[in-house]
Length: 445
Image 1 (cartoon, rainbow, N blue to C red):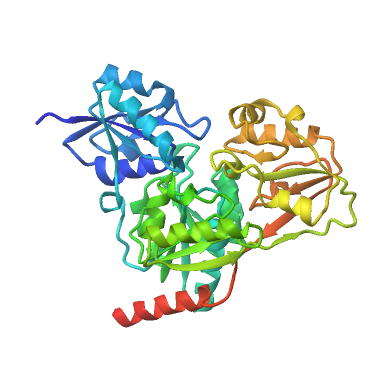
Image 2: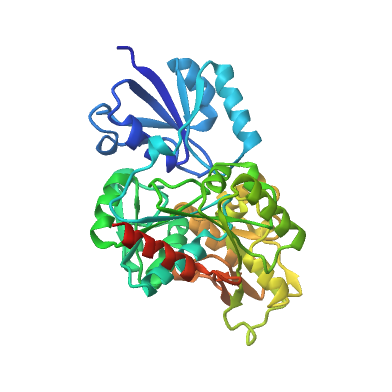
């Protein structure tokens, strides 16, 4: 039987998962290539034989997405599988139009073909956009479940930006594991806060193998979603966050709207800093798209390390990178802290001092103004971030990333961290809701 020629569009995450669970052992298809987008320096690699399986003994090449139409025509591709996230609906259809014009089918894969069923309860924490507050919510969910007496393990959405053959499955229990696996800033931002509160984290490339390992030490698994993707595992309870600072995005991004429509609990986060009319609009959109979902409002209170003894007239604001880049935010929690708590006289513009790929980030994402995105997708980019910070003339560096950059960057000027946690508004809170879920689960077994 003739095999269907397939190309998978990805960003080193959902693309590999879709291949592993659907195409790896599927003899009716021939995956010719992956393309890579969104994340720097992840193209021009190969999906290695140790992961691609016996049908692909030479592995599978990974090309930049810019080569997409040429690859379709050269290899007579019949199906293009779109497999990454946090993309506006209109941009998604532009990509679909390019694929169709080149002659191939354009396909989105849904939960039934891609979600893995676990033997322990799965609680997923996802969102409609990057930078809504998934990480702080995941930390709160883990904390509550530990208080309820559960052994909790988090499985994080993939970020395999290094040697894929060494990242099949990874377990993070202590900070030394971050160095052991040569983690990027983006990985450290997600893993370190869990480690700080005693939660074991798994991640990698092969999420069937990851689940097998994680289930051995968990009563309940938290899917710590990334980049507004939907869960790789079939959730028993789905929590989805929406952002009133970006009203309407909950209905205009893929696959964020998928998450919204399938959620059991929707949390409207950051209501303490959002406009009331935006909160009401987001709530109205939730009720239209998913009338059966429970809705909770939450604050994201910001605290700042002791800064008063330091000069803080001129402040450099450093924010979580992906929140500013493909998350499209123009500011984050550190900017709010600089303005409202520190009350800086000037937010220093780092752009004249930006070097290398950091300078390129500003050219590519022109909406970013006086904020420095903490990009660190590899050793070289981390060095360029460090150099940009150290070249910028300021009194104080305000670090708004989930992980303390000072652990692995040598910053040559005074610096403090800001922190933000989830605080539910009113009742029922997460303790009430998760206790109800776990009680029902125990009774049903």
